[in-house]
Amino acid sequence: MKLIITDTNVFFDIISIGALPEFFALDFEICTTDFVVREILQSYQKEQIESFIRAKKLIVFKLTANEVEEIQNFATKRFFKGITDKTVLWKSHQLKCPLLTGDRKLRNEAEDLKIEVHGSIWVIKTIVEGEIISKTNGAELLEKLKLINASLPHDEIDKLIKRLK
Image (cartoon, rainbow, N blue to C red):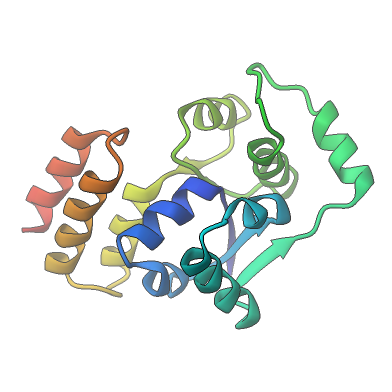
């Protein structure tokens, strides 16, 4: 099974549109870091994430002090205010696996490092392609995604919705 590492905002998007079980039904070993999990503060979101951790559907890399130091020293072209984004970038680079993010700066840094990178739109598209949900349901999730995340490319979402209908 192929590993994929996700950041916090992809979790927020997928939880907000009610597609977390479908996300974890994908044929990927979904991973994140303990820094990402600590950023999920709202109880209903935290409960959902923790249930997938308990079910061993979400692998959480607990970073050691040495790894945190290595991450802090990990050279990037862009400045990252916090360490959370850098933890998923570093882990994805280390494991040579795709990264899921909705953060433009993180996406650009990953692309510079030749890391395959996708976002929330890709997750929904992949859920539909994997026949986990219908095309109609996929279009509905994309409409919800447009409402909850204004920073996403709405033209790209609209094209995908048109293809699904």
